[in-house]
Image 1 (cartoon, helix red, strand yellow):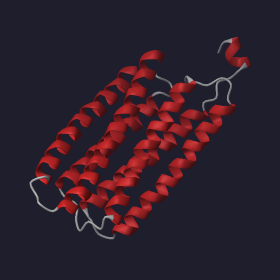
Image 2 (cartoon, helix red, strand yellow):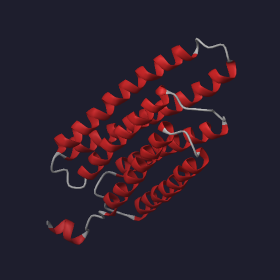
Image 3 (tube, helix red, strand yellow):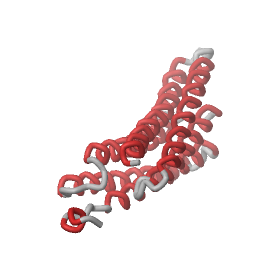
Length: 209
């Protein structure tokens, strides 16, 4: 350790907080998969995701609090802010989608919802691995591979959304079209924010490698 680092040690609490935040997001994504695959006891399952969303908000708030009072940070302040914000958005859209399912009183989920939920969970798993990797950035290639996979999955989500909406507009029930279109697009937006998070992680890996 150099003299500067000894005099002004970097605050590595951010890595602990990001590990905690990504674990919450991944857990919520897993519960979203369970909900879409078994659309029963919806209110109870949705409440579990709401609780995770609240936990995520607390962690996000703590990250910003630490950022405001830490002089030397292990990552650039903008990187920390963008990463925290992106993860928060993913969690918000997972939570928001389940709220739509509940309040729209849909009777069942369909294959598009299930597949999109699975893709979100796959992305979150990759993000969790990449976030853990930025703690030391000993293997930037691994972080990059995770990010590339997140981006690949987002492209799959785009295709699923396009096909789902095309099929949806073959129906004649306007209310059903409105409800399901909202849900599809909310799910796909979660994959977009996962891609945003991956882009931040990729930038970190490149800049710190």
